Amino acid sequence: MNASPVALFDRLGGRPKLLELLRYFYADVRQHAEIGPIFNAHIADWPAHLEKIADFWSGVTGGPARYAGGMPMKHFPLQLEERHFQAWLGLWHRHCQARLAPAEARELIAAAETIGQRLRMMIANYQAYQAGEKRPGTM
Image (cartoon, rainbow, N blue to C red; front, top):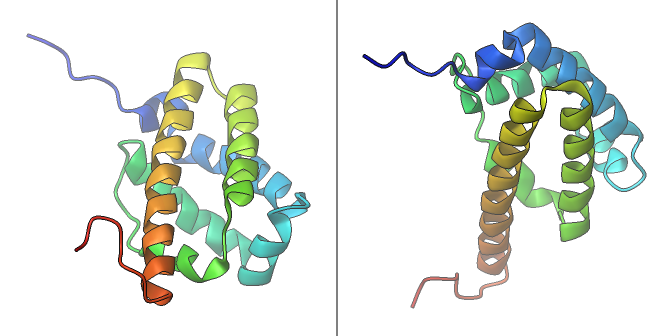
């Protein structure tokens, strides 16, 4: 009989440790020259936003699935470019590696990279649609 694997959420320390990581991470995001202005222009209530982001990451990491916010669509009108993704992911890498055990850091970084790739593709499709172009994969 195999024991079921422990979810990343639990290995991270649950919601309290996830929120701690997010608080430190987004404190740096807010001050970042490249992406800080984007976040600061669109988020008025940071404590509430961090709770919502913790809900999102909770589900991603195998914890309680509480997020129901349509994450990709919220990013469509922000005019995000590759440099913005690289800045966000760079900070994410640094914070995960500094605050988590190596295996958990790698797993959380990989999840963010996968989400980032999907989001890039969705934004590109949205922008092509807005411009009246054919979407990739359509005839």
